[in-house]
Every structure is written in C-alpha cells, then in structure tokens.
Length: 172
Image (cartoon, rainbow, N blue to C red; front, side, top):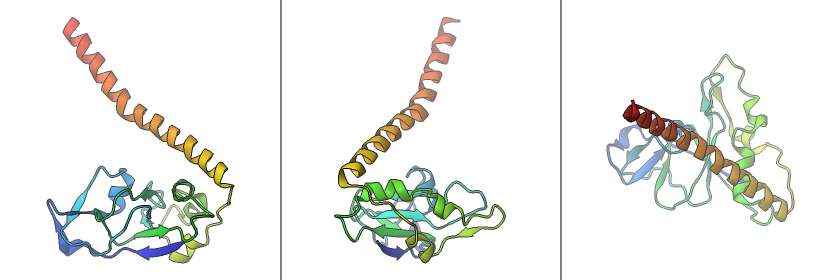
C-alpha cells in the first residue's frame, strides 16, 4: 500500500469552494458534514482509502475510512491519510476499505485516556489476510448489502415513524 499524509487547510476554508476538505468530521459522518476549499492542497483520487489518524479517547472516528469515488473533488486535511493499493492483483480496493475501517489492530492504540494519534508505521504494519479474488468479491458483496440495509434502517425508520405520527395526528 502507498501512504500519503494530509496537510492543514485552515487558511483556505471557504463557504462554498470547489473541493471538499476531508477531515475526521467528514469521514465520521459518512460525508454529511462538509467544509470546502478553493485550493486542492493535497489531492486524492478514485479508489484512495482515506483514514482518520487522530481521535479523542474512546472516539468513534479513529481508523474510520472513506473510499474516494470521484477525481478532482476532495482535498486531504491533516490527521487524515490516503492509502492506495500498489498491487491490484493481490487486494481489491473495496476489500481493503472494509478490512481497514475501524480495524482492531489500529483501535488497540486507543488507551481510553489520551488522544490517539496513529502513525504511518502503525497503519502499514496491519496484517491483512489475502483471500482469493472470488472470496474478496463475496466479502465485498455481503458487506455492501449489509451497508445498504443498515443505511436504509437508519434513514428509513425515522422517516416512517414521523409519517405514522403525522397520520395519527391527522386522525386524532
């Protein structure tokens, strides 16, 4: 895997810029909370896996990943790294994305007391099993379906509850 560190964007943040600044809040909210910049200080591209390298004790963002789906759209902020497969024959990018996101080997650095800061070597030393390409495809398929299901529940269920409440109010 290749590794790239993000850079600070504090001075280039604007209300409605061309590039989305990928920071821990962006990744931890699955892209819902965005900051923008007109400068692409640290560009990333399709199939880069972006990972949060720093979080509060017992935080939910440490080692969480985001898979880049578009070129010329994102810029990498500090405390976020970009990983890219060097050997596409060995690992499928989406398999790596799922395997690395919130990986236990990385979460063990969180002592529950101090801010956790992962190092490049911590990330690159993660032991990653190499299933066959067919097994990787199966794993990806199952996890994609699980992701769709859980996303549907987290978005659809509150909307359904609200709709039923409105119906009950109308009937009352």
